[in-house]
Image (cartoon, rainbow, N blue to C red; front, side, top):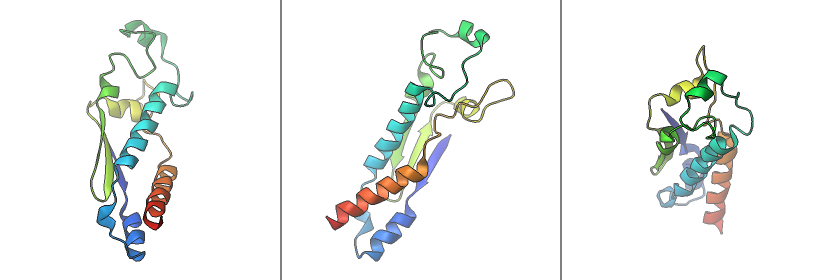
Length: 133
């Protein structure tokens, strides 16, 4: 499962300013998005995730771990990549989609539920500030 951040509008704006869009390094955007996702895990969706059921708590290997953390495999499988015009955040375990969308027996706990518009707006502002000095 992956989340894509298309930065093509930003590149158009940069080119209109007469600058070379190829010089933009999106590593900071990838890092900001990854940090936002880790905060979701650490704060249990900023307190918005439904608590685990008593049955699930009994099955957990580490009941003291966070709502979406048992072995830590899903959290560790999250990785980010970037190219010249996009940032992609992916999760390397197939069961992540059930947590993100929910099922009839499990509430949605979307750890990628971050404010993408705010992050992209911040990134755009940072890049333009870097270009214009």
